[in-house]
Image 1 (cartoon, rainbow, N blue to C red):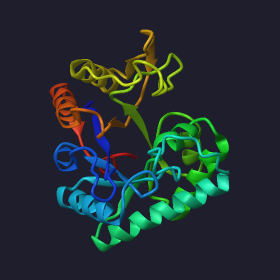
Image 2: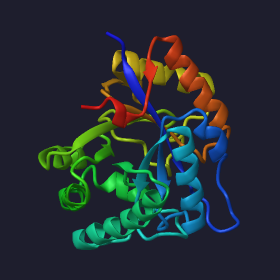
Image 3: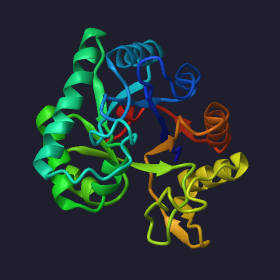
Image 4: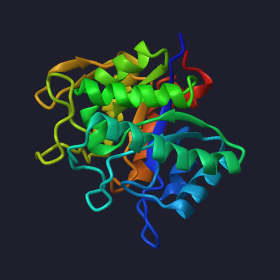
Length: 256
């Protein structure tokens, strides 16, 4: 049976005159994009440009909400209540949805960013807040998450869930990501990333930083657009997957 996978990156993560990554080049390789909604990066002009570019290339558009942490790039715990998480997600999604509607596009998925994305995997109250917001916004939304509380809450709400495998991050033995503050958390060797990603998609296994094999059943592979050499890395990952017989396609086109 042919394996199908989505290839996604976080895009639109500039602000004003400042840009991060080569979004235009990445969009020629990806099949989906997580678009920053203004709280950790992005502004109305960048969101508009990114959505337009996705629409032109047939790339799936996803909302990428975060904690209100522009200076910390959404990577700090803001100590929010679950109610604040819910309303912040609604606010950010609404902004991107307005721009998508203007361009005749639809938001297909929602993927929490940074520290919020980490915490929804382990905090049931945050997970329920995000899943409830997503379901009330659009029952057809796909929620992108790692295995954990958010994936469970989204499924319980009747939403489709796309499990994310992360190409360039090290895993702990329990399947969680190594924190970015620790050495070796981000993998930079392109050939190692390519090898790990193909094994993760084809065999459903990835090695932890201690060499422990971890079962991973991912639907989408995330490439960080702010990683040095991200465009070359994304192309190598895509080439490696296609050489292994994997079909690369937007998640919304095939996920049941």
